[in-house]
Image 1 (spheres, rainbow, N blue to C red):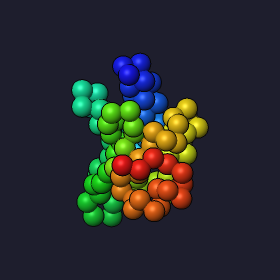
Image 2: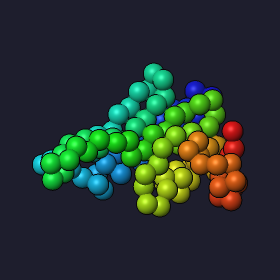
Image 3: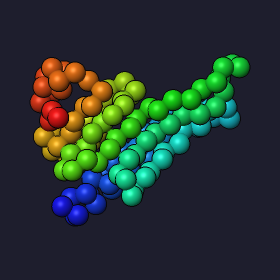
Length: 112
């Protein structure tokens, strides 16, 4: 299980780093990845200002719980699950915690 979790950690961190690089930063809004390896929580957060309005939000939040990746929040256009599968994570190990079970079943992903 430790090697599986280590592999999950590596993949999740790389996927979040890739998203952060793709989204980039500008002078007013930064995209930050936050990795809590002790508790296996991984977030991609944007912070800053846009035309006088505060920008703050979690773009992606993935937890490793047991032998599954729980996508708790996903504000990407396509959905991060395809990136995770492409990186080698089995669909049966991905739970979309932010969607109703019916939607998760349509994508043939794990349900809680």
